[in-house]
Image 1 (cartoon, rainbow, N blue to C red):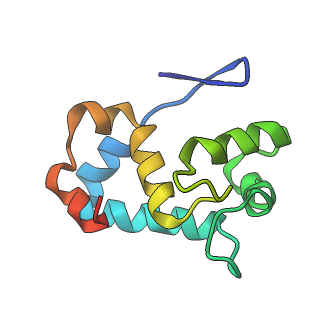
Image 2: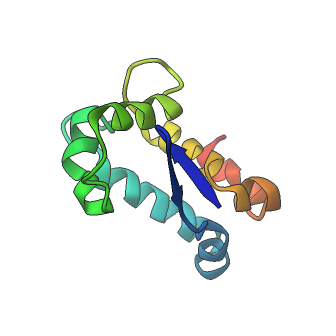
Image 3: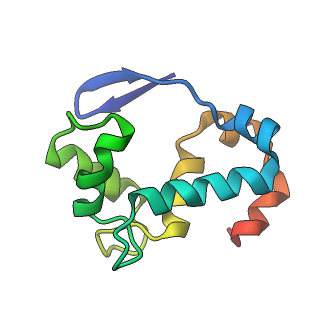
Length: 115
C-alpha cells in the first residue's frame, strides 16, 4: 500500500484489520481513542496544528513540513474548524485503512462511535 504525501510516495502497512482481529472491535476503538488523546491539545480537546506538530515526533513524523501537517488535518476536518475532534480522527483513520473499508470487518460495530 502506498500513500502520497505532497509528491512523495510513502510505503506503509495497514495493521488495522489485524488489530481488530486481535483486540476485538471495542478494543480497537479504545486504541483509536488513545491515539487521539496522544495527539490532541489537552486544553482544547482537539488535534490542532500545534499539537500535531509537537506530538508528530512520537509517530516518527518529525521530518514532515508544516504544509504537510496542515494537509493531514484538512483531510479529516469535517466541520471546517481547522482541527480534528475525536470523531473526525476516528473516521479519518477508518477512511485511510483500505483493509477496513474493503473488508468491513468492523461492520455494525461502528455504532459504538455513532458513525
